[in-house]
Amino acid sequence: MDMNQAIATPKLGFGLMRLPKGTEDGYDLRQCEEMIDRFLDSGMTYFDTAYVYDEGRSELLAGKALVSRHPRESFTLATKLNVRVARDAEDAKRQFAVSLERTGAGYFDYYLLHAVQANRVETYDRYGIWDFVREEKKKGFVKHWGFSFHDSPQVLDQLLTDHPEVDFVQLQINYADWESPTVASRANYEVAQKHGKPVVIMEPVKGGALALPPKPVQQVFDAAGTGGSYASWAVRFAASLEGVLTVLSGMSTLGQMEDNLSYMKNFQPLSPAERKVISQAQAALQSVPSIPCTGCEYCVAGCPQRIPIPQIFSARNRQLIWGQTEQGLSAYREAVREKGRASDCISCGQCEAACPQMLPIIDYLKDCARALEE
Image 1 (cartoon, rainbow, N blue to C red):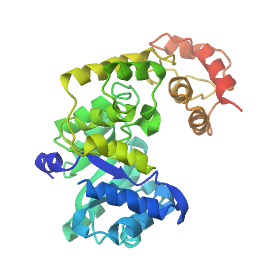
Image 2 (cartoon, one colour; image 1 turned 45 degrees about the vertical axis):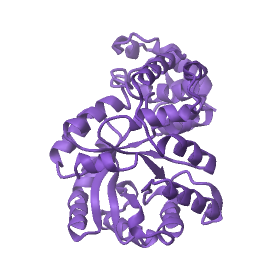
Image 3 (cartoon, rainbow, N blue to C red; image 1 turned 30 degrees about the vertical axis):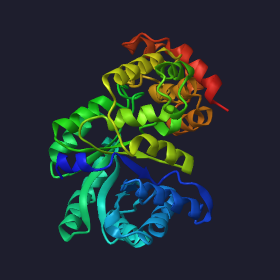
């Protein structure tokens, strides 16, 4: 897959993960059909689902609302194989056949290894999934293949060095995470660029958080006076990057669809003046009260209570920065599963001695315990 093909692809992709709910296999089928039709009528073509989305119902919906109702050549369909839910190699490979059956697509335009990160690379290797997908491409059942990625630029660089045959990579990129030391949007994007791989962008609106950003960020965009939605700034920021295949938006309502199409149907990259507004928004976001942890994990190695300090701080920041109370609680519960809780801190101080940012970690943990422990 070359960059020219990536450039020619419409820059808005329809993520089929947050579809409107109803009674037809868990979805509002009529509204889903209306959204899909509107998307295609506007010249957009890229649809994204996965074997694990909504326990398979998303792929079934793609079959009913998209594949069975539109000519196969009128759209492109992406789905993903996830080793995390597989019992063994054969079970993992069976996902491909199941996805073909659910969707009725005949072939996949884009096929991805799902959520590749350091702690799953060994499983993808051991199960032979890289070779398996490459063979499916040779058979014509896959047109382009790659992987979605959640890890460091060092891991990404090694993966693309080891697997230069992949056609593209899917990354989390948005203006809030652009310089994030944990998500590393910019650094991962630059690795993909170095290897000449087109990028599919996920989470351009950070799970919906940038559709209604913190007040200081709203004020920056309001002052710009463009009249566009807050989400439009986020999606256009992502779509304006070079080498982008498409930007996925998990649309849940026809209203969200119409808003996205209003500025993406005839997409124009950010102007120099608009890029300055984004920079101001990023600065405003940095001014919002938060725990300024860089995620280096120097504090973790010697903790006698095995407290996952950076992950706990990240969960608390969901509440402080984005007002995501429930998401913060959920992230906290996941972080401390089989590990120490914030309230387990014994104030030994080893973490503060190790912290290169000289953060008052003990005090922060006390705050996290109050806010996150039920």
